[in-house]
Length: 127
Image (cartoon, rainbow, N blue to C red; front, top):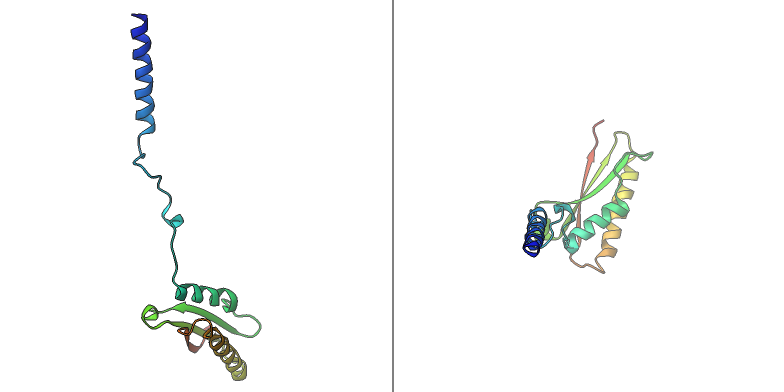
């Protein structure tokens, strides 16, 4: 009888452990959605690289911002957009020099990625 009680207690302990541990255990462990692996395209990487290395998010002493991004047709065309915004009173020569530099660097990039194109959109920024 003592043996039967020990077996019953051990069985109950295992059953309780399974019930406590079982919720949420459906096989593979789930992680937060923002941690799931993702493979960006070469176009997405290039836009991200350009923004990281050449993008300027705030108006500095030169009064110009530069922002690279993908547009709605970028996947189809391979074109990266570049907003070149400048404050009123910024010298036109400076804006043109920045635009020319972006175009030159994209031409150099085309040696590696012949499909890479940029469309620069110049606009006067509102204060």
